[in-house]
Amino acid sequence: MAPPKSPAKAAPKDPRAQLLDLEVKDAQLIFKTVWEDLEEEVGHENLRFPKEIILLGGAPGSGKGTHTKFIMAARGFTCPPIVISDLLTTPAAEKIKEQGGMVGDKEVVGILLRKLLEEDFRDGAVLDGFPRTQVQVECLKLLVDKISQLHNEFANTHLAINFRRPTIHAMVLFVSEHTSIERQIKRGNEIAAHNQEVSETGVGRIVEQRATDLTRETASRRYRVFKEKTWDALSSLKELYHYHFINAEGPIAEVEENILKELQYQSSLELEPRTHDRLRPLPLAEEITLHARQELVRRLDSYELEHTELFQRTVEIIRTKFIPIITRHALSGRAHVNSEDPLFEDPLAIAMLIDIFSERGFHAVVDKHIREVFERVDLETGLIHARTKFIYRIQINFRGSEIRRG
Image (cartoon, rainbow, N blue to C red; front, side):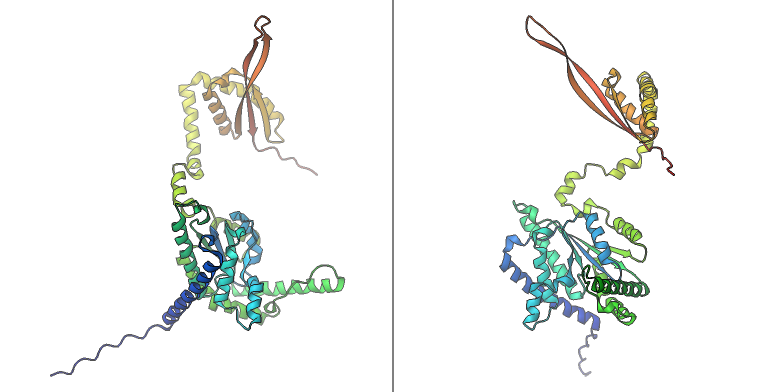
């Protein structure tokens, strides 16, 4: 009789997978503790987080500080960015350090979540330097899940506007090691020169200088730490949220153009589903403009073939009444013409006028004004007789002439 088979041994688990499992468990424990403390502190109905969060990360010297204001302007944020390194010098963080504690992931997440609850960040916030570790990534995922749960919980209540569906953008500015080192050293030299001038003249304020900006060795080490520790955490975000990888090697204007393209508004991704469904019947601007030229040609041909007399009269009044005035305003590129011609009482004539100007390279806007004009008073009855007067005010814009000035 054959001996019984030994149970098969499980294949050893990949060390990286084991580490990730530990980080996930650590994050769950950290977040659970922070969330429970927060809920007890502010109350369930006051857990009101930003509608939009932009996670701004990047290599040292990639220009996070330089481009933050531009990113905020592009999204319409008026609140200051939340710089994670600055949070570590807040009274809450200093208190932890005074008590002999270390500001680790748990403390960072706790301080950050309390900051995000401030009313200034209700519409949106830029987080400069978060997340930096895989534990922080996991905590972020748990936070977004919680915000989504709150959104669903309050969806049909009077508090719904305070618990909107969250939109998360991860924006990573990337530069090569060579560029990073050169920019760090340049920054260090500029700050050193500035501080020396302040010391000598007494004018201005001393700027804090990073130790890593002083030598190429420390600048290189800082870049390697970013690639070894932070890069994986940032890269993992591409599977979770709107991910924008920005090549930050070029000039500022070029980088900002890349950022703007990446942050183009997409209502289907950012609006509440109910809001999006309400707006869906309205066409997008690009849908209207896509075939605008072909539609214009079709309309003009139909005017000529189907409304010949009215079209001819409209062209003639433009030629005799409008063009002379426009010509006198050729330098400015803007002319205003008032007309009381009864021709424009036909709405089709106004449509023709706008289309004719468009075809000729002008942009026309028509306003119709109605005025009552006094004519006479009936002395027997005291009735005032007036007539209705229609005034059509047409503004024509076009590219004006360029004047060469010596």
